[in-house]
Length: 322
Ligand SMILES: [Zn+2]
Image 1 (tube, rainbow, N blue to C red):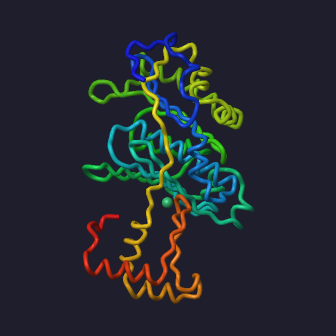
Image 2: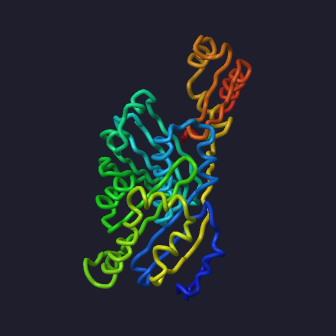
Image 3: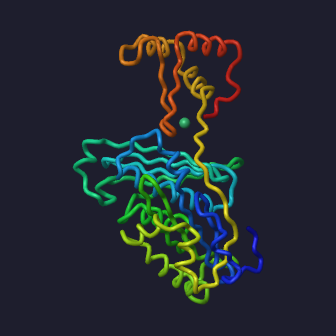
């Protein structure tokens, strides 16, 4: 949707899409910007092959919403990887999102430790780091590490914005295993990259931030999960000159393939593959690789392995890039 002269009167709220889309919006002539999303079927598809405990599903969902909002907020072609790695019962959350909004995600956790853990962010993730990696299609890879701090995953991501981007940012996230939702608003820099601490854009951001803050906490999170993204924007900002700039679909897409797994196996070499085929820990004569992201199972028997190794000796893999 491109709406050059958009005012609040011109938004046809009931005809906006109601699921799995993200919405970019702005106020104050673009000096305050935001992105909002609520994912339902695409989020359920991303985790359907995993039996995530509710606490893992909720945090992973928030990480997905946070990562997609970050991608929507950046201008680049490539891939963003948001990772939370810590010493808690949930030791790893990984979300990969492409600039065309295809995402996949995974989590690692310890059932025993999780059963006795509290509900706070620190109890679940422990001390750890948020690692943000941006891999542009062209140009240098960028990586930023900040400690995981705050009461919520949203606060931890806000910590990244504070340290790395230095743009005033408010972020709220809410997820369970059915729905994940989030909203991000930012005060934009003016000419010369300066973010004014007073004046219309600072006042505008303060006002919008206060409305976004009404979504913090259990009641606000329940509201975010319950109502569609456009309905939530309408509820919060119906008295403000909100403009919706565009609406874009978000999809789950893993991108793993038998060919890719085969290349990875070939890289291990004959000795390792022979040892795995002979191992008693795996089904005899089979190598099974399960994708951590989508849960797909890839099976290779002796004949398949022989074929991989033979092909490899004839023509080396075109790319060694992983
Ligand atoms: Zn996969």
